[in-house]
Length: 143
Image: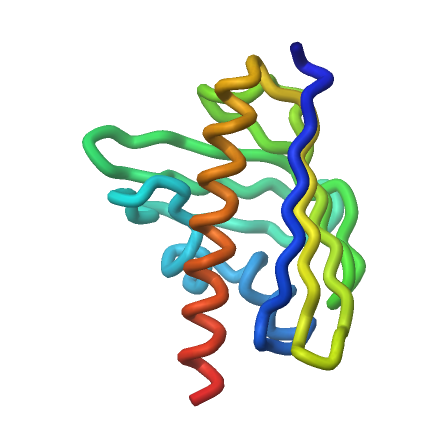
């Protein structure tokens, strides 16, 4: 079932520069990159360059480590990285496209390769919560 894919498209009231920076800055990542409703990020490390690695630990009742390697980084428009966790295969990949629109930034997040349909559906919910938190964080920074 590794050929499963998910895609989410949303518009955030923030510039592409702000959205791009948020996805790569460890201090900012700790404020939004939790996929579970009761999770927090207890560790975030990034080396934002092609070939650089990242590690994010989401914690609720247990720690769940997520890690990967940045494959493509095009300032303010594209971030592509591998996504390794206990709930995804090692060759899963996430692509984030950012497009300037009148309302701010259109973000399209696509993830490919999942262990099962249930894992894909869980990631769909998690990524939506993450984008919601990012939107709230960036909105607060504008005021």
